[in-house]
Image (tube, rainbow, N blue to C red; front, top):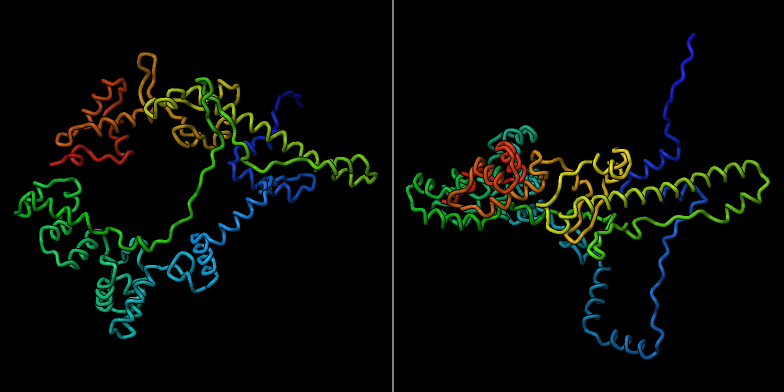
Length: 452
């Protein structure tokens, strides 16, 4: 038998709740508070907003009525509103049965002299098209799915490719452009280019293409202009628009007397309060079970209120630390973004690194340069420390973009030359790092950027 004494840290319920609320995004927090108000009767949400004052002046009301009766534009919009009540008025538009690529292709089949077997197969092929209008499945795979011969599928595929829009039913970009050129009866270099030289054309290797096709550079450039008029995504106009996701910033940066100040969003969540009625009922009730129930619910509500105050304080302090640390970024741009780690902010605020990580999770900061995720400002240095300063990865990428934009397009810089140029500008990074950043920025290699 041995007696040991040790210290073990346990997270209290209050601390656990603070951690949970801290890492919530604004939409998650709003949903949490609404759920809390549903299950905890002592929590009240105040979503009310003062109604705008209505004009009381009789003369003003008379003029408004006159405008309503005589404004042609208002009558036009009122007529539109009445049309919207007609369930058939919106067919083919966003207000009713939306036009789709499948419906558009299917309607064209009714005007063609096709047997039902062929028409059904063409409809099946139309249903297999992706959002760009391409048929990515092989003929053999389609034949196996339909239980028909490959020759039958090929014939039906030819029917599909004769429909509008031109290029639909192609298996890849090259074939899509070829179908469109054949539709306009193009027989010049453009047809040969889209079949065999698209990659070279994308890299502007006009001389090389001209030599292989036994034509002039001018003819190749003219073919390029024709190709650029084609549609690489014939099915895109029928693509249904996805719902736009809006970002609500959690923090605003404002400049006051030359100093950046972080302020939290005024109403990023519905305000909550503890019901005074239930507090009074707790004092007056003689029922032990009622008192225990209300006491537990009041403790939960008070704990949430304290956790919200702590969340706001931590979030504001983190944002202010970012504003102070990245002052040059907010004034001059991304090229001045300094390397900053979670540990740097944690050390400055006297908090744990995990607390900072939770505080910036899915939070957004709005400044004069736009809206940024707060995690954007945390990055390691791209270079070793030089003359007491470090260069962040974002700043190094911004510098790389500037060098590529200003280079001679006839003699673009190689990765080694870019490496040397960046070192001269105070950003010494290796050639491999230059290549890595270039690929991340979708910048082609020197040969891909060269204009012949």
